[in-house]
Length: 608
Ligand code: M6R
Image (tube, rainbow, N blue to C red; front, side, top):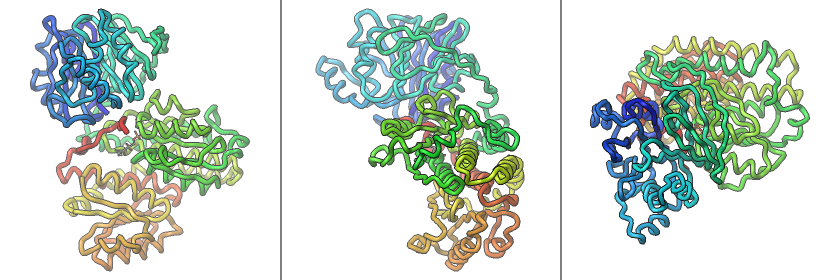
């Protein structure tokens, strides 16, 4: 899970590569490097650490005259993050340079083969094997050498390749790792993701698996794995450049939390027409739905937590049984799934490899695939039978926030649609619920106005060593997400528990001063939760509760209460989630952590 950029054109390549990489640091940031054609040879500059270290080494690249090059920001998979293992990797003669995202599974046998032929390796990476193998296969035609090499690679790759023999061009290829091509005027680009090149072009080709592209400054040729030329449609990106920048906020995470009212509204608007649900090619007919005996929701991390909310909603509203699965488990547990099942895949990036492979597993067993995806044209979107796009825009902070809220928004509309078609709610109830959904963006705004209270609470507790999140029903699903958010960006140990489960063991960990965050938004479960709060309070816990303004009983037991506006229980997660995200954000800032780029993590997890 790394970031790749490539440039060929008339401008100086190095500053463009550095600027593109700065937009991709969310994909990995333990080392960075570039390779350019300079003074009749390939020059590679790379270093361990953040991109800034690389940029400082070459003074922003302004003294490098090359107009062609490739760049990389790394999240280590093979070999520790150090200078040598950083990309680009050179072949033995230094005539070929390669940047790579993905994992070459058979790299050890390929390396043994090459070593036997006398090739000397410098790094511990799987990527160096690619550079060496291209050189081994080179007989005067670099494109042929790359094509030949790809045939031997097992695993996943997005590649950028340059050669001293052809300084006017570079080659790109992909399999199971994202790569896009940007078409400019007298210049062309490759990148792992669109924001990296948005400053220069909005015309994009999305490379499909096993395709190879050859780029010069005024041509882009794309070939399939058999070497046949492929004609592709340009995809025009209409995002704001600003949408990919911080827009005055200190961190992307806060900017993205503040975008929630808008993006939730946009997502609803794409699914709702007046007080009715839109019926389009994505919608299931009642007849199709009646054939579905079971739904699986499969995802990872935050998207998985959104899926648990989805399970509660779909089961409750439509009566169809729903099973949720973590994608990395689903794939290997022999799930009982067939053509009578629907699999809902959720992914912000649309590139999470565990989720993509789970999708393929479900599909191969006959299940129809409906995905909820944020990135248009991503692998998951392309391989699904139908896609509901969340309109969250680019999410840059590693911690997912606005994408989660839009995933919930999409799930509400799915659950209501299914309930309607299964005749589980009448048209009046449907209208009423749709009207409640429409109020949610305004209610998230009200939560954002209350951020000072959350910040104050965080200021008193950011030294906590351990935090428990508890809730029941939908609040339990929410507790899981609150806990993940806190641990990933503040490095504070935290666990989520169902309110009623705590007493079966975990309550032993509650002692004087332990912080417990309680989500108490489900009317039918308020009294039960109040009892759970009393249980932890009597053992010394400090309790912050999130609840609707109307729930005065909660105020009488918790130490601090953060009120969300009065809203019926079913819809509370959409607003309570924002409280959890703000809490994690302030804890992280107060602890001095790197909010947008927490340690050991990357935004898009494209390795298993
Ligand atoms: O792009 P995806 O939604 O498929 O990503 C899934 C998880 O990797 C992601 O949600 C991860 O858990 C985030 N860091 C959570 O904030």
